[in-house]
Length: 166
Image 1 (tube, one colour):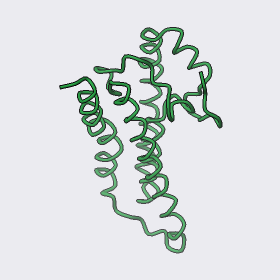
Image 2 (cartoon, rainbow, N blue to C red; image 1 turned 180 degrees about the vertical axis):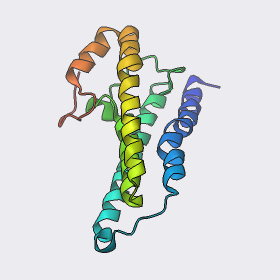
Image 3 (tube, rainbow, N blue to C red; image 1 turned 90 degrees about the vertical axis):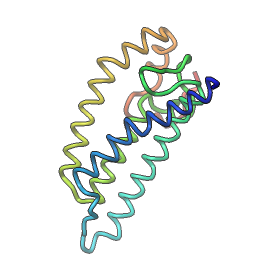
Image 4 (spheres, helix red, strand yellow; image 1 turned 120 degrees about the vertical axis):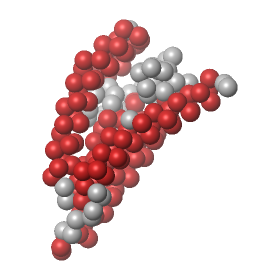
């Protein structure tokens, strides 16, 4: 099996194991995906929720595909050999986490679930803790100055308006 094939398989497996559970299974267990009746506001709330979910899924799939294209996976056990700074990563350093949180919040809106909002807040705290405590130090150790320059120029959580061309 080629390295490219292993990267795609690993990326797809990790997609189902990590965001699939965090943004799919757990929200379903919390809400049952029962749609909330917003009465007269449903006509606006439901489309906004679906747009958030769709955008989150699209950005998540795009970000995951970039890892496979760089012959690695987003999983810490099988990383890429080069720092991924293309596509959506030119705008923000943590697009996968933002996408997952957007998907969860879209479901919270669609299901009218405060429990999902609380879950999203807990997930955010966990993600920021992981990024600061493990991911950023590991990327600094692995990619050195290249990552530090990227980190100086691309925000972690609020996207740039123009792509970084470093």
